[in-house]
Image 1 (spheres, rainbow, N blue to C red):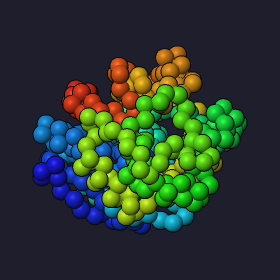
Image 2: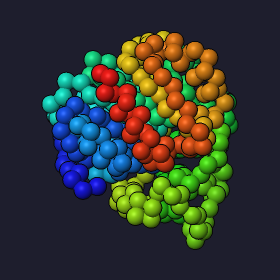
Image 3: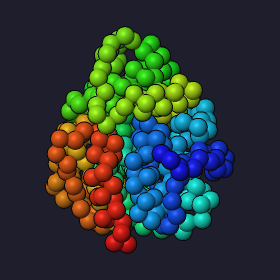
Length: 317
């Protein structure tokens, strides 16, 4: 962590916090939920030591970045707008992009909307999801996975925030980070995270008490509403992206996923990746790596291996 610089930048009408280290070509890291810039700590140190300028923002609504109140402020157009102005502010014409979870979903939008600003994309966990013009995403998820599917349960403003408040940020983050359940995650109506405030969940080797404390403190300060609003803007994103129906992503991509990842083990995802449909939608997909015995938080669980995968790919450009 030594030598990581922190500063605020003005982007797209908000103040955004970034963590950065190193000099050279820019590698832009986008975190997921419930995470902040800190989830890329190993990659920031690793890639900066190899001659790159590693930049990891807190996306809007997270950490020390500004959190607008309206759900409509969390559309894919807003988030990508933030990133374009961030890229401009650091003086880069193009960046290498590395992203996971919700960051990966935003990363796909960035590559779709502004391929001229991305040299190559190392995507973790979440493959490209082509727009279905016949049905809105939340309606589709309810039909396929039921009302208790986690993205459906996140839709009602205030409801999930109240569930989280019962347990506290640390307990909820610990539960999510340690969960190795496969397939589509569902949250029960009562006690959504299936735990009690005083229950003891052992942390995995790759996530220490200090890591938990740092993350939990930021979420205690900021709250979870900003992060949850990304899910609440899913249908809005669908409406805003009608013009990109059937559009291909024209950026070189390396995709990496753990075989125990709850996204990868959700019905239909493996089939999409393996069938050639992923390659159809992302014609410059160079490689798919499936890592054995690894869950969703792959960049933290297998930090050194991910650093090597990133470097071996982007050094070719």
